Image (cartoon, rainbow, N blue to C red; front, side, top):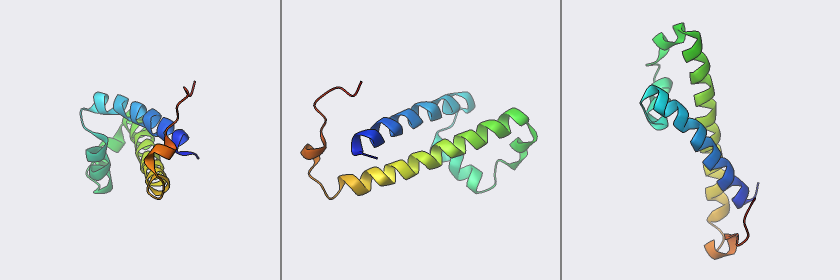
Length: 89
């Protein structure tokens, strides 16, 4: 993926995660940390919550991978070389 494509996808993922953050009242980083510590096991009893948590976890992990790819691509280059001066849409 290009840097511009990564930015678009990261923003999309963050918008999707914000829906879960608003629904459950916690930030994605805190949700993910609690999930990895096993603190949310009791929530697995509810089908809707289980589905939401699976989706939210996937969005978070994908965003983390995309941010890593973005960082890896942006570091070795000059920032100005990556600016897109035409609209993406």
